[in-house]
Image (cartoon, rainbow, N blue to C red; front, top):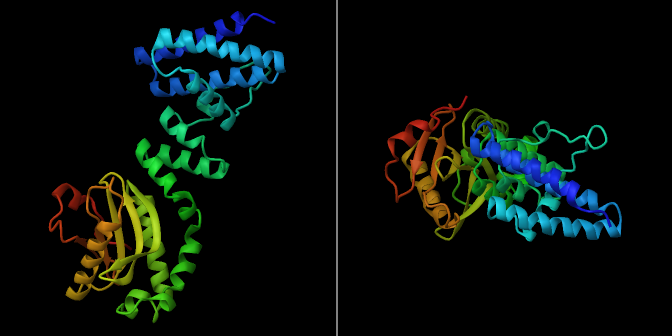
Length: 313
């Protein structure tokens, strides 16, 4: 059996270089240096195992040595279970070398804005398109790890991937599914085309022109005083840590009161990890937005109030 020393030494030197870069803060993305290190550990494991049973046994021994030495040199994070997670990471992102043993520059393939905690969530996703979607969104929008996990758990990709056309088709069915007590303006029974277009435009505007909005659901049902009602659009505003509900209606007192009842009921529906009450956007036919709060929060903080949209074209 070959000695593990050459491959072990080369890998260990590479890891030391990455960690030293992080400690010296010379890298504009120091946390990504650890992502690179973990990927290369996984690469060594996989490439060693592919050379046959004898080399696979050797690879296990190599990983045990690395785990012990890395733990001594760099502290926690290099236990054997974590070392095998690095293997899973490599298999989820099997970037090929360009010339024999030449190592690829991972920064040309992976998003450097994301940390190892992000990639640990992402590598669990078997659907490659879903994984690519979350990588782009999490990096572009600077999602914290807890937000990424929450949106993955809520199947945010499958909600969004339905696309605007599906949203419009779903809204078209509202008139036949509307509970008693909702006006034709709200369900769009008299003018379905303007309603569909307005909902699609609102969704597009919030996702593309405002920071922090994640689409959660369309036509989400809520029980209000024993009656089925729904929010026409629901978003999660992860900067404010609030759910945002959107309804289309005139700004008359009856509509405001009805919407506030919906917000109060939604407060009981939202997960306990979201401590802030939901906020509503009541959008009239001209596009003007009236911000509605729940009964538990009569007035929003000024900085939040000024950050919310006041008009949708």
